[in-house]
Length: 356
Image 1 (cartoon, helix red, strand yellow):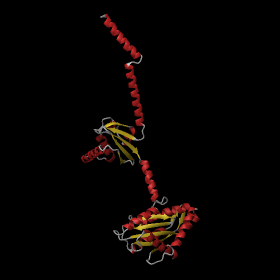
Image 2: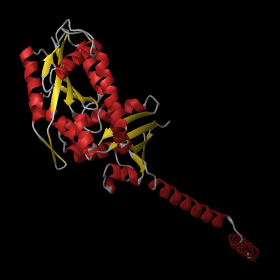
Image 3: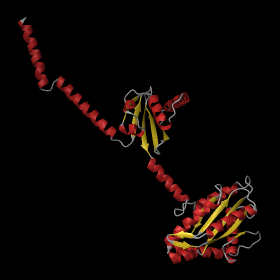
Image 4: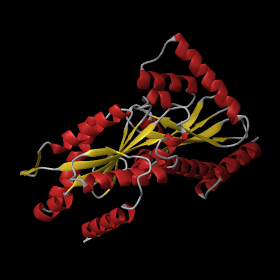
């Protein structure tokens, strides 16, 4: 009996000694601490990501998400706990964004979840764009997992999208006046001409400001630029919403009058434009008087292509210029295109003067 007691004491003593020297219990404690440290580092990394991240299981329940995910969708913390159904998160998000939360909306959300599950089942990653009510745009990438769950990553592309829209806008608009530029005009004019079979006519008003160069030379380019902006505003107020205005460059503008327009209708528009431009402008403390000359053509009567019509409009405009300016004229078929080279030379000289 005494031998048995001695052996038990020796075993306990040995275990205590092993623990003191780094035995099994100490190893487990060290592993636990290491795991806790790794988890803490993982949580720090996860919550310092700029992009939102969430992971769901095969039952569409949340496994984990980061702070960016919660903030992007303005979710309360109770909806970011592990085990939260995606359906609850979706319901909260839709109600917050739109106020919708009726039975019909619930059915629509259930259908969305079903389609989402079917798309995940393909095993291929995919993306969706989400436009939030605050004006932000998110690009969400979904990556299916082998167990039926998935990971999704949310990237805020609001600024990127705005920059792209700005670049696209600048490519098609005049930055000074804010109206369409020559490129956008040409595109719109050709599109309008393609539809002439359905719309009986398209009318082009080719507008040139009279003696605009004198304003630049006497009052300076800042006044000239402000004057062009004011002219563009008056042109906007002279046309219908369906008509198209563009600045072609320098002091040249154009109006595409859409639809079947009788001669008296296009002349009334031209008269409104000349009357609007003739009214004195108050520009940067200066009173400026101006006038406009307008050449008018109609498709298909005066040409079938954009180039033909623009040449004819240029001829009609030159005739107005030659006969005293501050007027408009409808192109007459059979008129020769002799002034074209001279008008082009004038435009080239004016453009070169503006670049000086």
